[in-house]
Length: 212
Image (tube, rainbow, N blue to C red; front, side, top):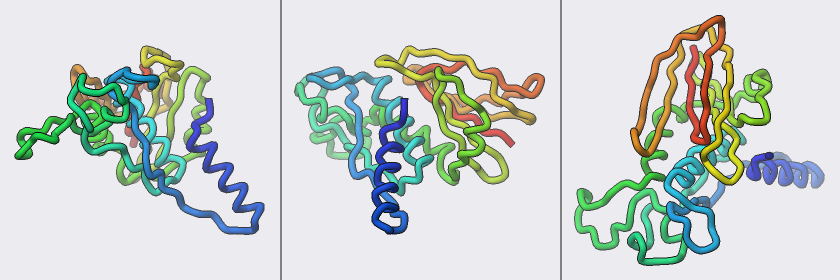
């Protein structure tokens, strides 16, 4: 399905063009996802971490100046609230902490730290993404990075993070494959393509592939 941020940007761009105005730059001032499935909101540790990576990646690809994550820290201890908005923090509730060592990073915070290893310094490359002709089961974004390329790819999800998909990514040199899971943390793997392709087994959580 279409990314709602890209769709909103397209609508704004049309309105500006219809009014004879030039393009504007945009910032999303609040976005978040709950770590627990409480109230009427979808939630979960894997879901919230995956959402953060996808939102930041697609927002950067769409040309947003930034996305302000809600929030820096949880508003309540685990189990103390039925308000999903209390559990979107990059850190667990630290309201009673008196020193930095007493704080604990959340799954969302871990995912954000991982993303900082490969997304900064990139520029959207729509032509490269179009050239992939991604199947309906795969979503992602393509970027230019230094003298190479960065692809961020994942299996399209439909209400759950358990989706899977296979993809052969065209490649001619050694690839750096960045992956992340809440159980194992960050992983960086150097892989050589075979017959000009890098075979990927994707899940609902994004992977980032750097190519020369």
